[in-house]
Image 1 (spheres, rainbow, N blue to C red):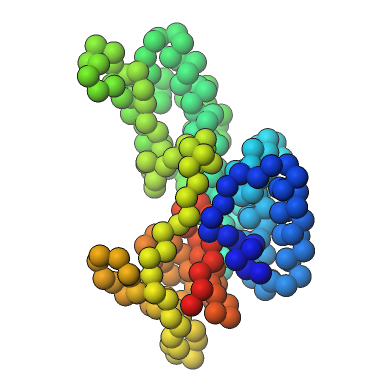
Image 2: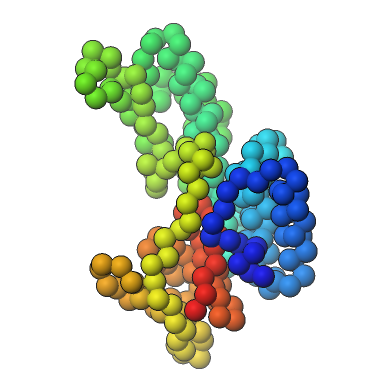
Length: 236
């Protein structure tokens, strides 16, 4: 059941399949621990976002997810995932302001200060409350055509893929681990042993991270993980 709720391999769905998927998630509420409900709610947003549903249908919920408070692993994970996707939405708004500048100047500005008045107030800083990392770029081999492109991203993830690219280039999270359970202080933990070229071992309880992925929940022979922008499950 969990692997069906949070699959690692995801691609945009057509309208009919999306409705079926959202209905299945509503049904899954009955069989999942309450502490995982924030992750389930985010998954409904996730499917809508990558399937091309207009932002008016999900943006408010995404913003609530980015602001929610709490220290439970599932809440922490949803907050970070929501901020990543909200950053991509806000990057689209900044892009609109930058394109407006470009139309008048045939070059992108040296800093965002030049277009700050055209950027919505909520997007003038990234979702973590930090400045955007922005710089104009001159295409290689075209030195006379300065500032014809630009790069932008949140301070935490300056190379973050755009919304469009994040949807178009969906790839399953890297899971090159051998996973086994361990008993630590009367509680369950998971040992993640790398199977790649660089051997490493990490023992985690929910809330810990390995390889940029957070361990959110340990179930019966399965666990819920959070990657940069999606949940997924692993077996052990």
